[in-house]
Length: 162
Ligand code: THU
Image (cartoon, rainbow, N blue to C red; front, side, top):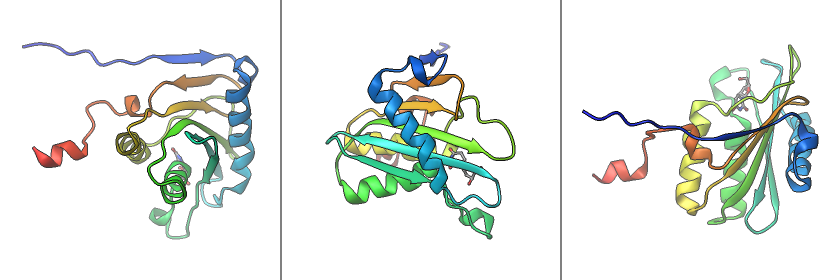
């Protein structure tokens, strides 16, 4: 028997002001993008902005529905737009922010499990790691080097072929 240790590093910044200019601009854009969320049921407004490998940006927000399971997260809205408008192009950096109108928005929150799976496959299909910036409307900011690290031992297309 062998024990495998799976870990990854997260860079922790005290606030957006500690980020380099480009990362800070992307996070500020994600914060602003939360305003386009449609979240009348949860009041949890999520905004995501991606810096594509070709320099363009793409954004996404969560879109809820009176039939709750129909709602879709900001990250998967963004990935659908990116894949449609820029087929085959990777994402260099993805900033995700949120505005919780029922509570605090002063710490980073991570993508949900379904979005982690979608992000991991986007990396796989574009052969490019996605740097992820996580931060609320204020407070600490996390930067991860590869979205797929959020989903260790993930199920991938390769498993279907074995
Ligand atoms: N949500 C996202 O948009 N992204 C996440 O990664 C976490 C959750 C949305 C889904 C729902 O509209 C609201 O936040 C509350 O769960």
